[in-house]
Image (cartoon, rainbow, N blue to C red; front, side, top):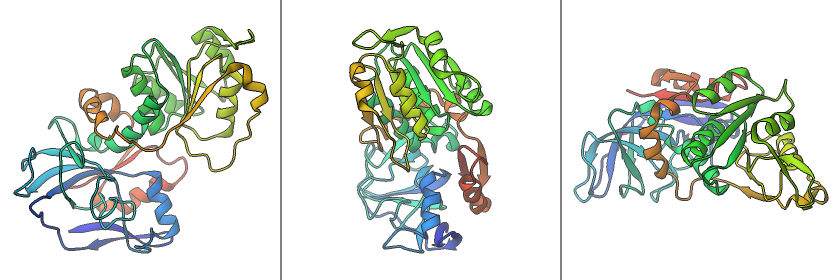
Length: 337
């Protein structure tokens, strides 16, 4: 079979490797789609991950069709459509330093267990949308970390894949109003398409003024006027986002950070004491990897909007280049077979 690997700093290749066979506790999946994550670009830039430096298989956002089932595996049948948990116990993390990646024609799911290492998805969900399961679990964990309640008023900064997924998650959790902030009109259009109640173009509009218009007025503990927003989520990773959220947060508002900040962010805690804000951070998906699967199945048309570019497997290396080029694409998915 063919698989895509990192061969050195900045280089990749498509290699022919033996097709794995399922043992009694395993499932063999014919991969049908794999999303590309920013971490894939990072692995390429550094030449792979030890101990497979220079020989790291790529891809951890996968969906496919079961073609072989071990004799001891229960709840899975040949022909089932499935999504994969890349960090489930096995011989290594899928696509993040382990011996396999989802940018392959086949993937061996070791010690296969429904609800732990894989989940079955309805046949009517397109494979490319199903491949969003892993990043949408990241977005759902961010939503869960903020403690959103029905009726909450929310603002999401950043309309990339995680921000859009979070916007969907907040609405499904009963948020009264979800506002999305970004600089790019095309991204803001997507935010409205996935169900955001309003959008703010921060390059043209004053965020604080618009949030007050949309969410009403709140106060700090000492009565200083603030926007009536209950939850701020940073899915952008720009220092100005954190600073804007802190400057506008009302008493007991929650500020969640799911974005990766590559540099320290200066915070004046003295200036925000009377807001008594709750600051939470979010990483990965401790429980959400398959909690989000049902949401995708029931709302796949909304999640499909998140995909910006599709490439065939023969063009997988070009897909990686496109995904790594700033401004070239938002969410790239490679279709396989």
